[in-house]
Length: 118
Image 1 (cartoon, helix red, strand yellow):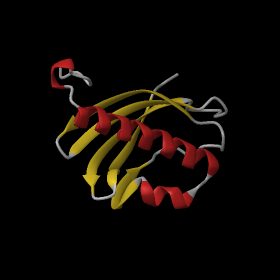
Image 2 (cartoon, one colour):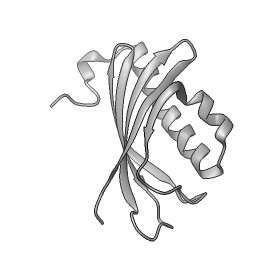
Image 3 (cartoon, helix red, strand yellow):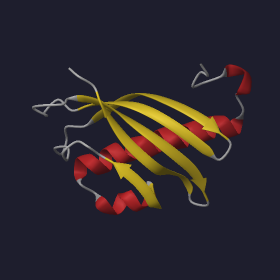
Image 4 (tube, one colour):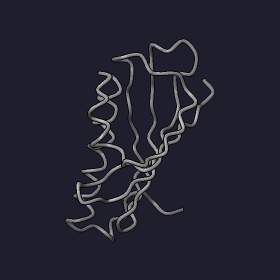
């Protein structure tokens, strides 16, 4: 299995890409928590596919961690653990994202939520 971070392939561009993608994921979590729909234009591509089987997350109840990011040129994938402590049913799930480098920076092209039984 290919590791998310391969020390032999470290260069300034790969570090910059990883940093930008990590910040994009954090920005999305903040946008969800504050219901900032305008911010989504800077996070998703115009034709992004979002498959969200979960109900809307309560504001301020959204925590992400353990982002596993794989970069391959101008595309990337990320699998990020999410915890919603205020949710009465599904509290843990993964965001699985496909990303594309655009002229405006990295953007999410597809997002799928995978539930975890807890």
